[in-house]
Length: 315
Ligand SMILES: C[S@@+](CC[C@H](N)C(=O)[O-])C[C@H]1O[C@@H](n2cnc3c(N)ncnc32)[C@H](O)[C@@H]1O
Image 1 (tube, rainbow, N blue to C red):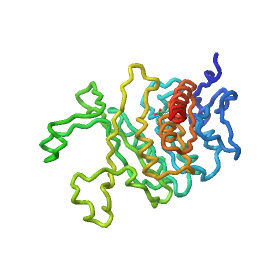
Image 2 (spheres, protein in one colour):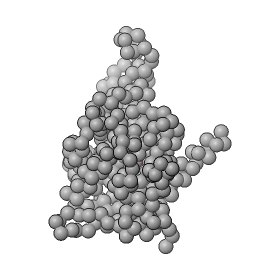
Image 3 (spheres, protein in one colour):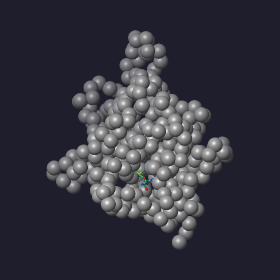
Image 4 (cartoon, rainbow, N blue to C red):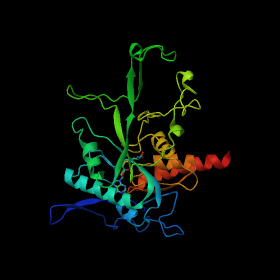
């Protein structure tokens, strides 16, 4: 069996009826595991072959500026190495552990952007998960990630750019006469104090009505706060998908830019998948740390990052 492919995660039932995550390689693969940088913390710009809780435990307190992540939602997706059909309590306990460890390593002025969705027959999931974060964080913003939207011209009013009714983004039909198609997910923005200053215009939008510029003290240029509704469609529809549940690279990119970043910034994605957060961080020139238990997803992610770095070197 090729190196890395022996990582399997299992849930075992322990005496007190809780579930414990175990792995034959003790969380971090011996051949692949966590690579440490000079300071002893997990090396930057690598997706470590490691259970994220184990990985975060190896990190120093207050060493991360921004966490952007989308954990498994426990809705029965077919991941290669993760069981997405955990008992609900075990899943929520796990999310609480993730919240705890992340809180320890997040800087006091850091931001944690948590993307969670549900499914039509179980829309409580994001709200159950967010409760597990409640004791540790302030919920500074709730962002609505819109994947698909329909706008009727008559409702939009008099906008030159809208010539007729539009329906844009990736629409996924739902096979039910009870449930609506899921066109949106949550991005919960947690901070430790609720007082973290954001770079709102880094993800700002241009004014439709230019007479607004200069009208208010803050409106000094043609950009305003985007608000908390972000339309981010999937850019490509792949014929064969290497991963069942990715978010578009633009989502972590906007989160990183909203928090604000420079070359000293450290971004963490504990559930890196095929590396969308790593791709966004690399494009923005900031350092990242990622954890992902699946070797194939990691390989896709590293390939995507290599392509960006190769392209940068050529240009
Ligand atoms: C929702 S997906 C993240 C997808 C990612 N945002 C992307 O765009 O590629 C969740 C990922 O968490 C990984 N995962 C599950 N359990 C994990 C654990 N204990 N530690 C690290 N990664 C884990 C899964 O293999 C899966 O790739």
